[in-house]
Amino acid sequence: MMNTASSIEHRVLSMVLAGGEGKRLLPLTLDRAKPAVPFGAHYRLIDFPLSNLTNGGFRKIVVLTQYKSHSLDRHISQTWRLSTLLGLYVTSVPAQMRAGPRWFLGSADAIYQNLNIVHDERPKYIFVFGADHIYRIDPRQMLEQHIASGCCVTVAGMRVDRAEAPQFGIITPGEGNRIAKFQEKPALEDTVGLPDAPDKVLASMGNYVFTTEALELLVRSDAENEDSQHDIGGDLIPAMVDAGEASVYDFTDNVIPGEGSNLHYWRDVGSVDSYHEAHMDLVTEVPAFDLYNREWPIYTMGRSLPPAKLVVGEAGSRSDVTMSLVSNGVIISGGHVRGSVLSPGVRIEDGAIIENSVLLDGVVVGPGAVVRNAVLDKNCIVREGAKIGVDEKADREHYTVSPGGVVVLEKDREAYH
Image (cartoon, rainbow, N blue to C red; front, side):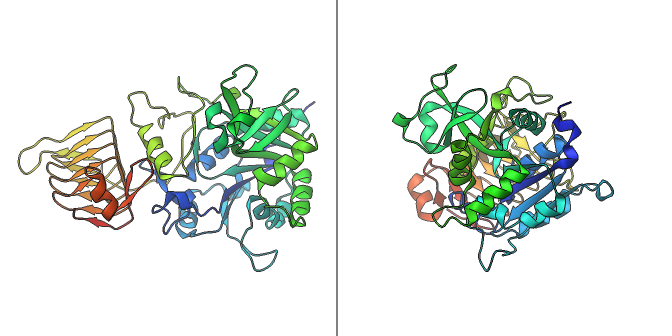
């Protein structure tokens, strides 16, 4: 009788790669790791892969950290407490320099330097997930296909427009679920659409399941290769494809309990523009990504805060909020909020206007101020009458402005202009 994911959950170890610097998310990553960046008012990016794994029943998880990891480590220790009685855990593992006095050279090297964890746990299969994507996936279904394939590795693939191929690692499917070819950010003219959807290609989601024995042999061989970049997508997967031992799991085949009409949402939020766009996906009338799925919840740290409050401003103006997420602890006193995400403890004062913006914890927007198309990091203060996202020239003189025109204020910044 063939094993299924449900019968071998205790033989699975999950590794979440959370060591990236996140340079494209600056200034949000000035003093925090990218997976620790807040998202969706209450959450952090790390909560999404951890929720997918734990909802799927895989609850032995190590988070491999490296750069600026304090807030990430603290969030994991305070939030992700599983039953030690049952041998379940989520734990952060800093770079320990077991291979010498050096940081991780790449994602493959991160696994190589932590093979001691694999030896201690002795899993039969290992999930390797990225830590900075917004999505839901039931990993049990991916594991079941991996076991049935007999391959050494299975790569999760997301269907994207062929025009986007140069931004991703592109998978060409072969016979059955085998991968015939893997191209890292290929030129558009070098890509071919899918047989059933010529305008689509399969892009790697950065999520993998390995058979443990094969992964250990692979990372040991990679560590000895001086020409390698020591990257999973750039080095390990092509080697497995060449050996005929790699399969692809089409994300569109995944069935997530409780999902409505907007299935198979996945977004890389590695840049300020994609981070802002993903937030805007949350506030549409029918959100592209639904935070309210009770059958597959996204878990995070609970906070002891009072309910949000909307009151009349000092001048008698009424508070007006439409198409927005408003967190606990928010107070809106005669302010106007449209298409925005307000995180815990935000304060909007009399006559202030907030449009298409993301305000992280503790932001205060003073009377008559305007904030449009912006991301304000924690504890920013926008002084009375200041305008952000109104005058592009002034914004570029005083703040960070993304290629897509999103204005970003770093943590604790005060805006007077």
